[in-house]
Length: 392
Image (cartoon, rainbow, N blue to C red):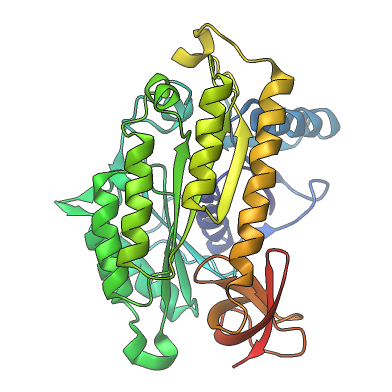
């Protein structure tokens, strides 16, 4: 039997898709890239924005029209409860199989969210917060290392809510960093955090990062806006000053840390001053990796019915302006690595390229290192956002 996977959206969706692929493979299924020769097609959808949901729905309709007799399962943040599909359960006590297809391991440790963000539809699909058992998460990380992985990407719907028997996110990160610490040489494995909400728990994560060199020097936060008026209307539990203060403290506590964020434009009633406040925060704190997107009405959310809708073209124009500024800042940040030595996890063997700890793509065109290996690179130049160097 053959199965084809189509995955949209965030790292959490990707982690779940990879785990599901491994489950199918363990039961004798063959993964195929094309729909034509698949017996089962699994679409893991995303509904975080109107565009993301539209892209998913278009693919689903295309599959239904072209292959009306094929089994189609829709899951993720755009699920279809009318077409359930379950694999035969594993034997009791049998651990979940480890995915091996990617260069970096994706470890799902949390799902669901208790946030009340007025624009977000995700809790409708993900439900209330649930955390993976602390011991199970650590054991799975060990199995990832034994399978040859040298970076573990920690994923969740809202990582700041991780709590397993009193063990919170800082405890988990510290324990994961000890699965294969730098002192063990070839068994060294980096730990990378997915997106984490700006919250008090993040300050404790900084402490762990400062103490353990194999925790990647990168944090991504869904900031959304630099306007306190907009943050309040969005239902976000922090102020722009809180974000700026945290960024300052992070750079003091962990020198060289790189920071990323999500920013939204065109939320209802966003004035020119609100937008300029967001652009000012971006420029002032110098986020190095930014995902900018225009506000998208999600049916069933409070924001859908808020007055003061911003015209679509203005939303997009503001997003383009922020993206241009973000591109300038990332290009400038990349240049700061010239002459320095960085570490990458090799994903592309042909160009000996991969992501640095700070989340910059770095290539060594005339070098070779095995895929999944951790390599040290002397950076010789920066080409836009990309670093270029040679093995150190």
